[in-house]
Length: 304
Ligand code: MBD
Ligand code: FE
Image (cartoon, rainbow, N blue to C red; front, side, top):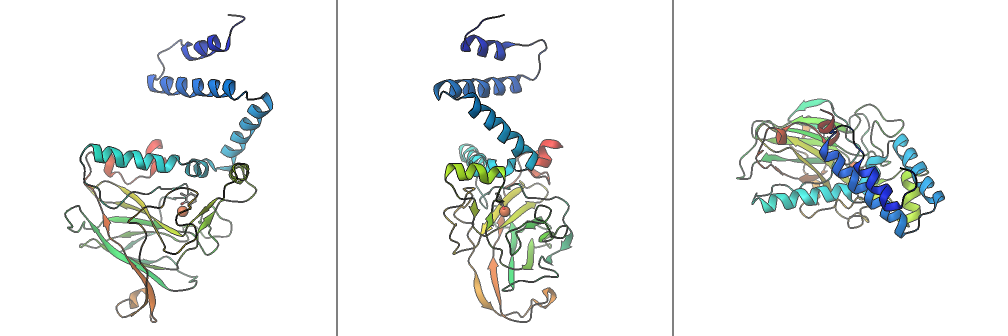
């Protein structure tokens, strides 16, 4: 094993083995390594280019921004498209469209019954209420569904990732009532922009792309026997609605905002003046396995 061609080296890398290992990992690694060998050869990648890319990958991992890059290069939406296609192929009726989780979820947010204020302590701008029901595909209430909700602050920052924010700020869990009803008070978040001077912004600058997301609110909805739903709603009118750097906007997830809504009946949320309201129901599919109804997000799933 001394002199060899590119192809002989590739064959050797992909076939070297002293134990069975994990066949799936072997298959995927072989494919990715082969594709990269071919890319390097066909595009005549220089050593400087290769090592600059490896340096960038190392900095990307160290910065905790891998989830920004997967979203920005379309992988998160790709997985949702594939899940939708699998449902269609299996003849499964869809509920509320799924939308990408993004990299900014934090488990264990404070839990409330039926309703909650997300803007506790620091209301901003117009008072906003979102409310609705968790329903099954037949339109029947899903009692006591557990709804995680999280969104950005007025500067586009998420708590636990953006300096100066309190733990679990703008993150809550709401246990819906026996009719599946939930509601929360908050303010309308702005869009999100990727952090400047970071590995992600570096690549986006080199690609001539912006790193903005339109205003959105994230949800994770969990109920026994139902498929865990990860989704987002968008606020109408945002410049980036159809130009989301994460490609996550979907029909059916852009909420209508009613302005000047009578505050009567919303006293428990501390509302006494006309407010902005969005009504939105979460329609859940039945779970086909226990795994599908786990109260876990993507990273928790792979680590559990
Ligand atoms: C976000 O707020 C987000 O939702 C996604 C998907 C990626 C980056 C930031
Ligand atoms: Fe987000």
